[in-house]
Length: 273
Length: 284
Image (cartoon, rainbow over all chains, first blue to last red; front, top):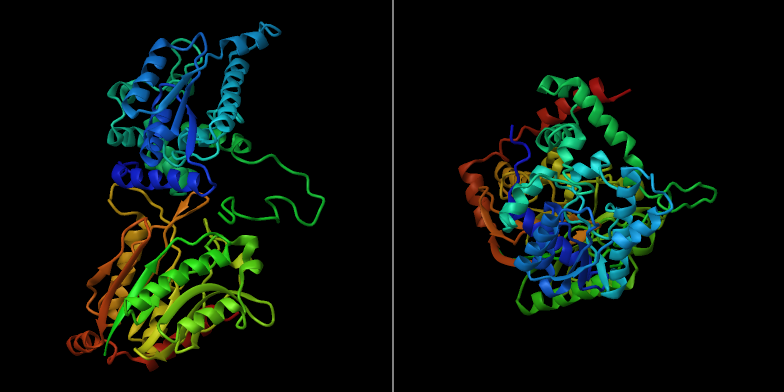
């Protein structure tokens, strides 16, 4: 069952054109992105460097004191191999200053706050460099809601949001992303030793295959079980997708007029560009 | 008869009629200099594809200056161009204009408006209700727009109405990335174009657009397929292109001698069975 196999040359070509087109049509020539040392932001950085040339790509490395030093080393490796600009901004002072008020704050609150701190830094640099914020969320995490709304999920354009994690791995190979980054276990790096797959309780390979049949091929619950997926797995993943729907939509507006934004006021974002 | 034809695989600007007209004008003038006889643009050339609520503000009427300008050009080159047509009773159609000798020889109004998945055309546009071939200085031509071509019945009508040249224009969104070096959407289109050309022994002139709208890519890959189902010319994928060649209706003649499928069509039988099917399955 290799439904998730992609032609990486063709994918790369479309995504590179996408970045160039969506950046230039609004009168920009630069992008800024958060570079974590993980594969998603590495792939986005490689694509952007190819689309706009490295001098138009600004990477911001934003570690917290608990971030693994290896992550920073990997991010630096991406900067070196692409030739893009890089700035290091530690978010420890901002995060610690805030949580001094809430010393007992949960990991979830801290993780979300860090993601949103990084978002504000990226958008500040968007203004500083006249650069669009390049998104680095993949389809798997967007569908599962495994990200922070208005945090790492915030961006202006996202080249990789329609690719599952296992497809990102393939694309990374094609782009020449350093091997170490492709091979290491995916992690949000919010605390030491954290890995996505351990936290989620399933592997990307399994959930990507399930999501592919569930979302892309529109298999029903029964048909998914017939394919060999466990009913508990199917139900759990479906619930994650449904309950995170709000993260993938604009805020809900109470309708009172005849023409409400996005309801009956409908224009493409690329209107007249 | 021999004539030269070109496909202008362009990326229009969404909702900017004037800018798109200027772009077309430059291409038309160049094509005139290059002695092109027939120039084909993609679906909704003058407006872009995901027009949604823009529809009314980018529509053209039969007396609009833009159309007049195109008609003036058509005295020197035959043109197929896509636009939103506004009728006197204020309906808006996804239309293709065939302009020749300063006249509108034909308007095809898209019959099948896809309104599913990523498409929402019927929400914003009226559906056409005619499929006709028509006579041009090159012979008999039929025009269909994008989704129309996914209904083989529309193609059958065009072919049986005597078309020697089937002009298909589209804004086909690129999707379906798999292991192949072609997108799912291009594989399907290329299969359709070859099949129609071969089974109806006619030339298929397929002009698709390129560019992006809200992250959706249009994959290009415009092509001309000969009456034997062979590719005559092919445009690039994903980026703008301009391709041209010379066509000769002798190729249609040869194919119809070798495989006289059109001659052997049993139209009466088809009508009889379709009427029966309509009575039995479609009438309330």
